[in-house]
Length: 335
Image (cartoon, rainbow, N blue to C red):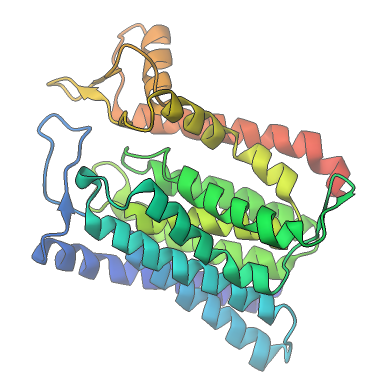
């Protein structure tokens, strides 16, 4: 890749790094603050909806990439796909901020409203007939844009929001998943798609500095919806649906566990006075709870802390990705 293509990535990182302190102060000023549920005192002054900064950094980074393509490379290749992707993220971000303002304590948007609005976010990809309409050799025709694309956008956006609630978890998971897709699309020759993905990765990297434990800011649904939607968009445009679904196994598991609790059980842990965590329910209702349970079983001290949960889930995600490359790599022609 031409070294000039690192400019959009640097824009994404430094814009995010610059914006976050301002957003944190503004969020506190207007009272957009949430509780840090996995701390003993449940601090109530952590800035919310930090995904606003990530979203803006991603948009600016991507726009700088479009400018480089237009003025430096004199190329209009894939501009329709790029602008369609940005349109998806813009609509998703709007939905996410509305959900955040509604307040997670009050349930935010209803499930029905959320799904309907997320469907509208898929329209930009539908109207350009994005992706390949055949799956596993079966030609789907109009069923692909009218059914598969909306299902992908809605499903990924909604379920990425489930595996959350621990400092740095959503952000680190986003960096891991998107980085793997950036490598995959690069190896498959879709370098333009890799740059778009990495703009989000570098935006998340800047945000992680403020979101890691102890978090100064929370991502909010604006970030989780955007990351989930981008993952689905990449899968569709890169024609890598099967391996992306495989990478999404932790989220599929999380969705099943959440459904077990009728989507009413929280991911948060029961916190001891020393900051160590306990499984909050008699049954397991999320990978976060499963991580606490496993770590308590294998650790001599029986002490599990917030970072431990995040690291174990990240390791599991990395193992799933490695296995995905091993299973699907030959089929995709990357080795």
